[in-house]
Length: 344
Image (tube, rainbow, N blue to C red; front, side, top):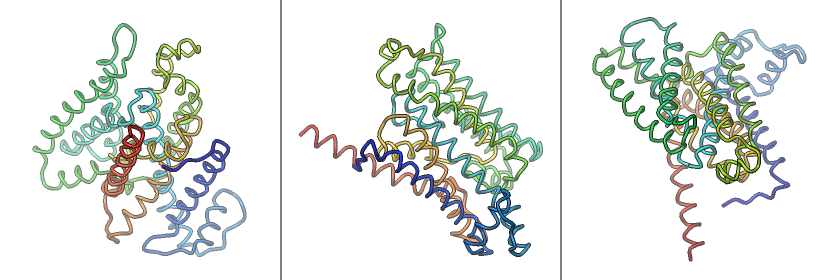
């Protein structure tokens, strides 16, 4: 396993941020219309008021209207999913937990299926997906809450139950769908950033940004909770209040993202593991690192999704699964070997 000294964690985190920015710029430059990287940077700087762009108008329009909203959505989506995964793994002290396990993704898929199959119009799809994800998550919390407290074990079991129920209802919707509706629903369930635009980003970015700030600010509380609820209480941490705040932030951030992008698998599960290996288990570095790596990985996956079979595109969830599953298997194998070495 890679071991990084405590003094190097800050520079490594900064390096990950630089790498993510570079991946985003490359994604803006790549596509059916190839735009040189220097002109791409010139366009981006011009859009934020630094200098004046002198590139051809069609290149400016390609980046400003088509590619930049998509790349920004990928950054926001990846940060929300990976940050939410890191927070949930910290709250439950279970490294196999991800946002999908508390019902957000399955509920959002069911809400989207209702709109698609009943023909209610594409404008209602994001709202129905967000509402479905929020309702499912609230149902999980209601099942997990007893005597004013939320049990981590009950949260996981409630998530399994609600996911099973929504999967059954989703199966009924798929059975009732015609061929065109089935294609639309299948593509949405595997995730896509093709429908993103500036209008969606106007509310998506503030919601996710506020939630991510809340996640980062609670890093000390998460470190305390990792020692156990009783120890955290002795350290002055109100575990129930912290859990409620972070669960609310995760549900809002992930629900807002899934409402527009569909279901993007493995980001919330794999990224926290990778960052934990690089930067350690302290949430001071784990959460910011997960936000950064999740954003960069999602941009990279979306770039591959639209380049591999161009001019068509793959669902981004297919790409993240193809990349994430082998990586996760490799991480499990490495950890198993380390545990075997410790036992020996």
